[in-house]
Length: 142
Image (cartoon, rainbow, N blue to C red):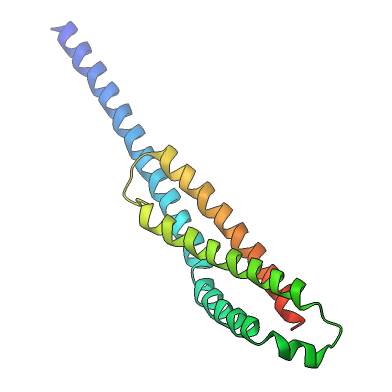
């Protein structure tokens, strides 16, 4: 009888610790998923600005002759290269966000998956910051 009691007590302890571990992982997963969405929500509004900027770039590229009226010494070939590169960078940032949103699975309970997604979205945030600075720098003088 004592053996059965000890066996039941031991199995209860083991099951209890397994449940605690599962609960800890669920909480960790939830925190990571919330962090990923928080970073997403922080950078997502920039996409509308990036889209407007690409339209502005197209307009400038279509009217590069006007740049010469403002600054006759302007190197329109260099400006064209800068603007085409900037437009490409803006579109790449937007495309990366769209791909991430389509592929992201917030319901995944795998903590390593969520940690990897946090790294992806943080890298994307850096990309958005970099292209935003590039945009301000290149378009600020036009």
